[in-house]
Image 1 (tube, one colour):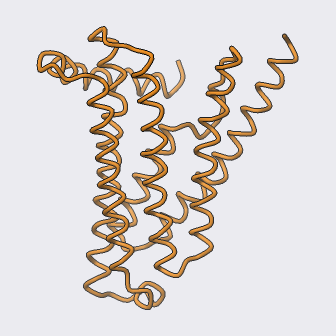
Image 2 (cartoon, helix red, strand yellow):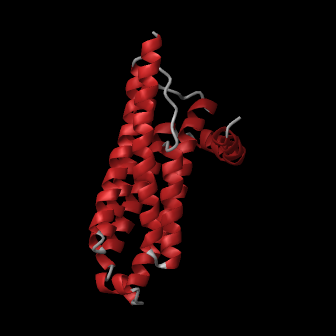
Image 3 (cartoon, rainbow, N blue to C red):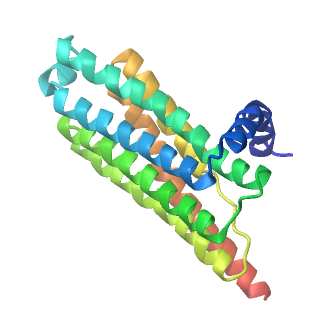
Length: 224
């Protein structure tokens, strides 16, 4: 059993009582998926608000100012909300299975809103860097967005060709956790370098994962 399967089992033990409550109240997986997406939209608003509040000169000089304290507070709480929204991303699939509510459209809706959730969140972070006059890190965050989309796209395309494609180091759960943790640490420390480090890590490993999956598909197709 790999670490992802182990963590998944632990989380399922925690959320199963919540799932049973959702089934009793009549919540559907599509509603849960939508709630998770809306929470990520709130995260994006928090990051945009933080970007608008950032004092560039204070950030560069590592100086204290009231607006930056508020801005970094929003970044930190945004990171915490990303983790909370991530639970909904797990609960919708679990609810579908436990409540016997799985559907083809539900799978499509889940995958689509997952992409939107990740992209709008990274867009907010990109604006934070640009407003802080860290233009290069804004580009890095954009590369992280590209890598995130391509990791998912290659897997979807591979599954359309009847190839199982789950290889790689930077799948969606890892990207979500890294983004959340570095945002929380940046918010608590008032240091954007934590957020920058997370974006660099995702930009590099997500794009490596995308090409790793392409190579995996090439080998599988050669076998066929």
